[in-house]
Image (cartoon, rainbow, N blue to C red; front, side, top):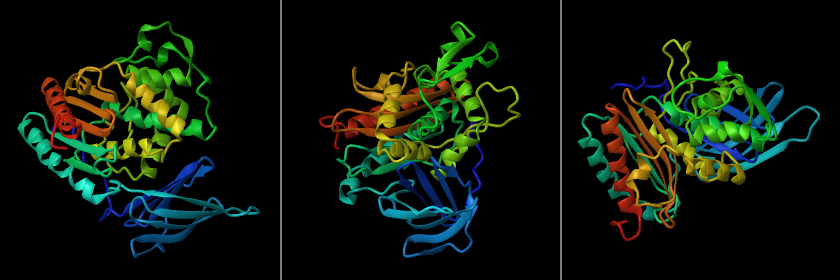
Length: 381
C-alpha cells in the first residue's frame, strides 16, 4: 500500500493506560513493564519497572528516576481513578489523582453504545467499495447519545500522517502554555531560511519577521502552514518533545520523524492511525491532556481551517465543524476532527491512501455515512 508505514514495534499485548492529572500524565505499559511520568515539573522518559505488579486489572509499583520516586496504582480500565505519589528529597510527597485513559476509552453506557454498532457495518461497506483507496476509519460519540462509544474500521491502518501530525505539535504547544512554560504572546523571528514549500501562508508574506506563538499555531492549523510547523518544531529543540507527548499517551502507531519538506530526512516519515487520532481528539475534548481553555483554543483554530474540500463539502451548509486535513497529491488524503452538530457531536478520523481525487471522495462518502447515522432526523441513530 502506497504511503503505509511498517507496523511499529509493540509488546505482546495491549494493556496500556495513562493517568491524567492536573499538569501531567503518568503512563503505564503493563506488557513491557514500563512507566513514564511527564508533567510540568519534568519528564522521566520511559522507565523500566520489572517489579511492576499486574493483577485484578490494576498495575502497581514504584520506580525511581532522577532522584525522584514514583509510587503508582493505575487501573488498566479507562474512566477509572488512579493515583501516583511523587517523593522528592526534602519535600512533602505530592499525591496526583486522576482519571485513567485508554485507547479506546470504554463507553460510559454500554447499552447506549451498542446502538452505534450498526454504523460500523455501513462504514465497512464504504471502505470495501473504495478498492483503489485503502482506508481506515475511527468514530467516537461525544454527545452521550451513544454512551461515548468508539467504533473503527481498520483502526490500526497506518499511513503517512502528512499534516494531521500538526495536531500533536499544537497540543504540545498548548500543553507548555498550560504549564506556564510558554506564552502565546512570545515572539519568534522567522527568516527566509525557515520558509519551505507546500501549503501555507507565510511563504507569501514579508520575511524576515517576528511572529507570536499564537500566530504560528494558528497558521499551522488554519492554513496547514508547513513553515509555521517547522518553526515550532525548532523551538522545541527538535521532534523529541512531540514524540514524548505521543509516547505518554501510549499512541503506538504515531511518530513525528521529520520536519516538513525536510531535505535531510533520509527516508524518515511521519505516521499515524485512525485509532491514535481519535485517542488524541478524545483526550483533548475531555480536557485530559489540555486545560479547558487550551482545548477551546485548539478547537477554535480547527473551526477556522481553510482547506474545506472533504468533510465540510459532505456536510449540510453551515454544519458546525472543527477539522484538520492531511494531503499529499501523490497518494494520501485525510480529514479528521469534530463534527459539532448540537446533540450529535462526534469525533471522526478518515485516513486514505491511493489516488488523491478518489481518496478525497471516499472521505466525503464516509462523512455522509456518519452524519446521516448520528444526526437526529437523518438516520436510524
